[in-house]
Length: 174
Image 1: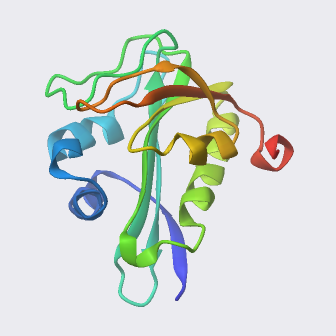
Image 2: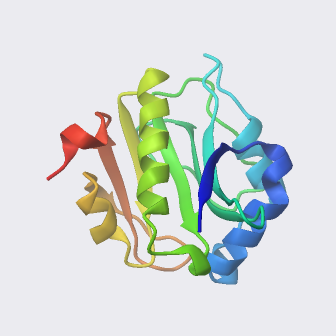
Image 3: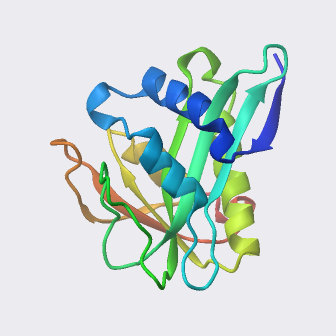
């Protein structure tokens, strides 16, 4: 099985929503409208979201997606907010999500997405990335160089707001 790394745009929304539905319980799902805003909004400085995915070359299906967007360093972004908007001035890039459809797991697609998102974020001038680790995923993120800022409840579950200084992953390996 072969995959192509592709840049995601708003016209990929249906496939992103499909992968989301395969990966997360319904309480975690964000609407197509929120995803559209996260893919198409820039801050006052012109910083744009970073979004990539893997397409299965044989069938053309989206196998994974990763989305990061500008944000502020003093609090995680709200989730499931129908009024979601970027702050005017952002100082970090926030990794909204990396998801791999169950059929395609075990092929290092998540790590490849993170590497590409970090590479792009560094090229765009970002120095720090945050994320909210959910569903007991924090050990995975720690293994990729993220450290906990503080606990953060998400959809009634314990999660962790985490951060990572942006250096290429090859130099940040443990």
